[in-house]
Image 1 (cartoon, helix red, strand yellow):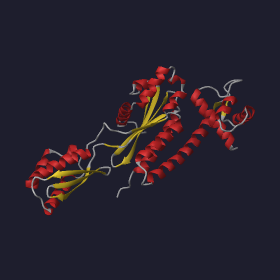
Image 2 (cartoon, rainbow, N blue to C red):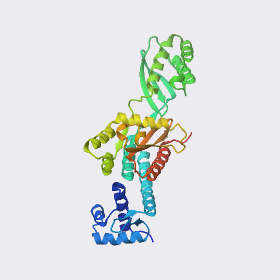
Image 3 (tube, rainbow, N blue to C red):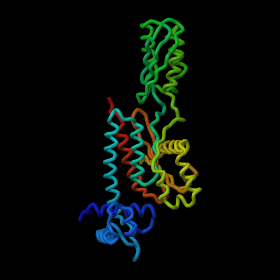
Image 4 (cartoon, helix red, strand yellow):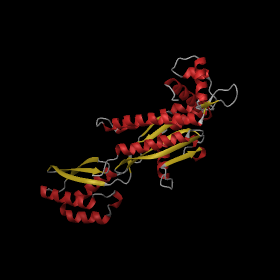
Length: 349
């Protein structure tokens, strides 16, 4: 027998309330939190049906109901269906060229907080050991060149270069060929003194241009680790778990830690570095004192890294009580990681 919409909503309300409180759920509680506008008696009848069908159970006489494994499984399956729909919505949002990546990530982190009932965070993608893809020098006037530097991830930077000696189109073409032949595909660390010396020798009287181009390249492909955007959602979900907010000072510290973006970025960076270990799932779980943030020692933190192609990566994190629904959290992160990887990675051409 399939559950009708009313029973599904009641079951979902029971599970969500139980996850929030850890206490058996009664019909009066459900009547306050659902949008069914049903009496307690009607809800009791529906709960009796759900119990007979094996979706909920009564731990002892006169107590409310708690979810059974069968009820949890149906709930998670429904949740994942909703998640798939939300991911499809995210895909459509990402495909539209007028939408920015930041909006996609904000929608992702909000949907994840709603799906899990925990606090969530995601860093914007960063490029590590960025490689140079292309350099284009063009003449602006007799005294200036425009250097266009294209880095991995299709980041484009422009730099004006002052000329100390006159230069003609043939010489500019020669410099373009030299620079792209020698430097394309290299990170800044791989551009050594020997390469620079050779380029300056081949450039002759325009050796100073080489220095200025390399300065522009360094600025274009440098990794700025101090300016990582981080998007958060669901901080108020902490308030649903009494063990996390036993007093106002504790609640304030936890909420404050979640609003401290620098600390979150550092924590997510550490988590991304930890993924270099033997954990083949790509998911890290920090329980209690394992958390890199001291004020989250009563929490569990679950993280994973997503990839957008061209060496661009970011990290997703979920913070909740130690009694969090780990299976649901891990399933959500695996699905979201896979979908984000697929949305943004470009096929090889």
